[in-house]
Length: 474
Image 1 (spheres, rainbow, N blue to C red):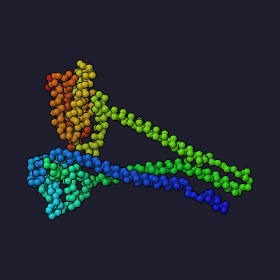
Image 2 (tube, helix red, strand yellow):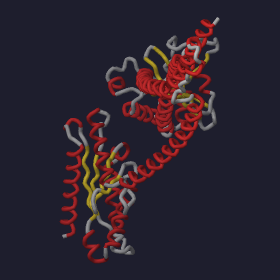
Image 3 (cartoon, rainbow, N blue to C red):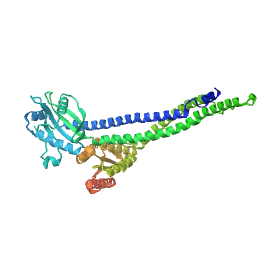
Image 4 (cartoon, one colour):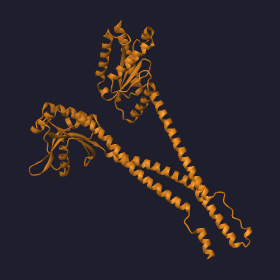
């Protein structure tokens, strides 16, 4: 009886340390699985949202160039009009200029016998397929046979009835595409065809898996570190104090059973008492939580201030546009994009304000600042699609990309014309009749230019323009 009671006192329960360890491992595994699922769907949704914005921009851009009544008549008569031919060339340019798989206009139909197919209206092609290897080109009126299933045609028929843009994932023998489809409506309010664009998303799943695995690996590592630290803390603060207390009780009982002299039996109380230690730990955790919350709030506040200061450090205090520091960071990004092959074309427009010293000396620096700000507003207004930087006292630079890059010659002429208007406006004050020189240079991949070389070329062209302006005045 006494022996059984000793066994019960010593080993009648599962060790607390094992219970804590098992629960920690289960918690970390559950956390990893849950976060993995959340991260996967979050990445997938983010990718699809980005593609939807990209597809929407393309479809809206093409839709703005469609004469719906003319195209609707072409669909009805299966006859190409001049506007139809212009639209086909425009769609070819869009397909060649953007990263899209297919760009097309079609009309799904159901015959009297119930067979389903679609009629090709316009199918954009690259230069090779349009003018050289034309065998597979789809012309106006081409009708599909068995290339598409009834379910796919039914989906197109359903889209044709809609009044909004529709997105869906399409898996076919040509790959995995994310498709955006926009029903086209003529002047009579009748939906007569579908404008659609396919973007290849074959690499999305691999990218999502890669990012998910990387983050999952980070979570696992952090989870293991957390588990080791937690188990160490639990051993020091919980399991060891309880174990020491248990040993003291068992030793005391053993002494009672083997010693007849009750006065010689002493109970050595461990230095850590379980009740007090648990309560103390609870209070410590509460205080630690409050301290941590205050610390995090302080960190957030410091980060906000740091972000604000960083933003201010990137802006020119006089004009409010980005400054030389921001320009240097942008150049670093451009160099990285050139190295990776992402950046294919860009240009620099270098602008220098004329007569700033004369204005400062004659009318004061305050008037000179007005001239600088006026030139800044003019540059930003003309090159409105390009980032503009003030890189010196009277020097500005615009990095030409996209629409501004394609129309740089027109923009330069507009800039000079507006400067001439200011110069000839006798109602303006001298400091408002600003004059400036401009020089433009573009990146050419075949010439193996760099960002710095393009900048130097723009700067040289600007100084050449300044000399020409000076010679013209003389």
